[in-house]
Length: 228
Image (cartoon, rainbow, N blue to C red; front, side, top):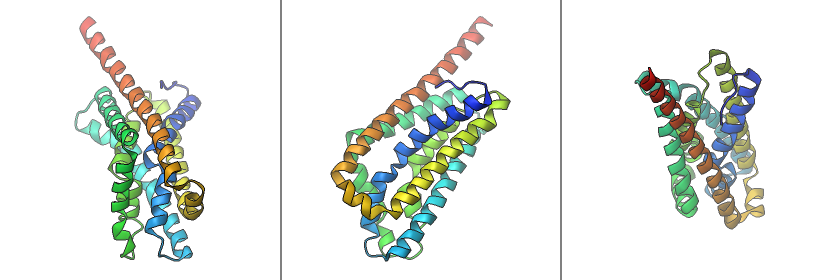
């Protein structure tokens, strides 16, 4: 997706790119079913409090990765084009794994919640990190941050749009975790698996798009240097 230099276009474009990517990798619908199983022995008020805390922590993790990830890699001399290609590959590989074997991903997520069944303070670890927003979510957020425009006037709207996408995903985490019992009754494991495959395919398309924009940037730079 090419971002227009117009600030409004950049904000909307950033939101439309970031929201489906973050929603796909976090998958709050599928995660809410595992949350329901892991928290089955806890009283409802405690589950609601945990859902609210996890939503807040997930927003902070995603926002931090979006704002800082790309700049940290740039600091180490990684060009924006190379960062886009590498980030897109990470997103695409992650999506391919989710698409081909969603059950393995469910089993890994379930094992990540096991400490939460016995410990008291579990909102950040393990229920936010690594269960809700783990390394996969962070790498996707960093890949998204590499899509920021190079024009100074469009950078702020881009991050506002991406930040709004992260906030909406975090709100969905809070609401769906809060209503996890109803989600379980409505969807069940089979329905969640179908949904996981659909969002994984969407994420794969986004990964390929990020790779394409990075490759285009690298080729343009090579051609400019060659002709220069």
